[in-house]
Length: 90
Length: 454
Image (spheres, helix red, strand yellow):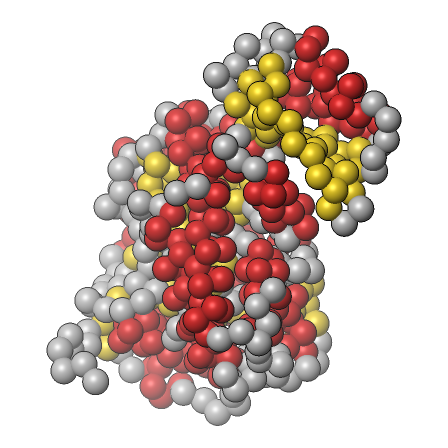
């Protein structure tokens, strides 16, 4: 298990989750949890995923997701979970 | 499990509040590079730096990408060169050759600064220390990425006033040697008292002789994050204020700790320390002066500034030490003038003077930093400023430093542009009364008494 956090921020539109999930399925990335909320009118989604069995390297997945986001008109980031764990948990 | 609000908070800090890791600095001992000839020393140094730090830039970029946190600078600190070159260098020009080899090595591994063109002369100077110091103006004029520092005093040894006198002259000569670039050479030269062996920040970084062969030190930053957090507690009590700064410092430091451990693992170099510093940049919203304003002083330099800075500095340390097992370096709030937009504005409108900055250095992490002064300031006056700062450090058992730029051809009312992270600054007035007779005395100021503390 190697957990990463995918965040999607932007204007809500049809098919965001579908397109992100399709990509993740293609790359053998399992989704562990999905949360979404609206902050100041913006769509915020967070996915906790397992990038332990990915077929490509992390950098490729990260830049693919960024490009996918640009295509949909939202910002997508993929970061290793540790940065959030370290900052918010003692 | 991490929740969405925590993720949003972290990413807001990075994207909107300029949270970053300011520097990953690899400390490299060059003691084993000493040789009989200067050419051999140069080739040994280049080979070792490239072998140890060849993958530094690439590794830092990978970590930055994977964690989504910018790592602004990749740097190298080395053993004070006066020691490494002692067996081979017979003239200042020999040391300049080493400086140029260091510059080439820095460019080869892709680091933007390399610190350690240094001499530690807190009590006395060897011949090689003197040769290195005399070579500084030419070395800084002929290189781009090499940073130089000279430690002229300590709490244990007192102040080497012969070195202080010499450094006043060297600062002037460095300004003269780089006058086409607004005396930029002086921005890469710092005179210290109680210099730490593990400082990752430039220009004062060097790899002390108490350190291991190689080590990774990380400097964290985040004035913008602290300022933003304080916006939510306007008008609240000191207790609430302090608690907010501590919590924020904790979060910032944890990110630094993570990056340091990861860099250490990937590069196979042991982790040394985290330097808990609020290091400003000229970017809007990345200013220590803005934090002081948020705490409640109208402009940095107004009455109350020293107390506010003392509190800020202490709370940053209290929050940070909980987040990392090994804290070292300079650790505190930096108050450079040209590198902090709020400080620049305060200096321009007359709120901030060199005398007030000197008072602030008694309670902050370093000293008089990135201050432009008139180019015709006498060398003895610069030595006087250095002696004053060194005395503050010596008596208060803290690191102090002077990095001032006598800008040749400019005077009060002019402005200087250094570019990039070094920023821009107004030329500030210096007290016009002299101290030549004081600086002209030979010898050293004895170490202070360590008892009867009142």
